[in-house]
Length: 153
Image (tube, rainbow, N blue to C red; front, side):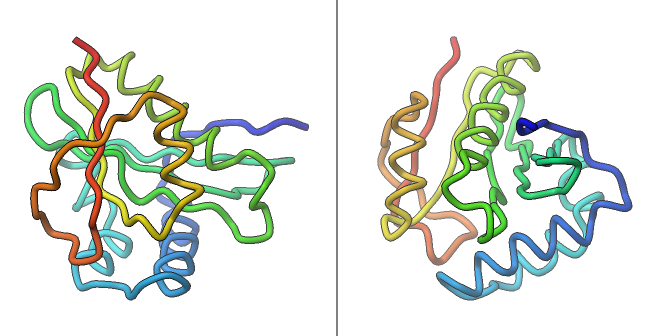
């Protein structure tokens, strides 16, 4: 079977939290904002116009990505994580492309992200799919050392 994209449902919150915490704990630390967003995605993201999507493979959730409202026309692609057992299966690129497609469908002007250069594979995917590097605006993530964006307009 192929990867499929599904929308957030409240019963999927544990997957959102588990996938992202595993990724953060492997490469960085779970910062207080991360913990709150992952434990409370409806309040942190969805109630403010954000979206959360999951990648499934054979009916099993293997990855997640969120679109966080920043301001009118501008969203952040955030909290993208893939189950470590599925790395190399294309789920990361699938989630990133899906987030870009959803952003276009929603009529966004710009989609931005913050990341860290240690995540070379992710940075490669972002560039491949059209994100360009811009000067880093310090935000809520202490670990961020690169900022990228796609302008749709």
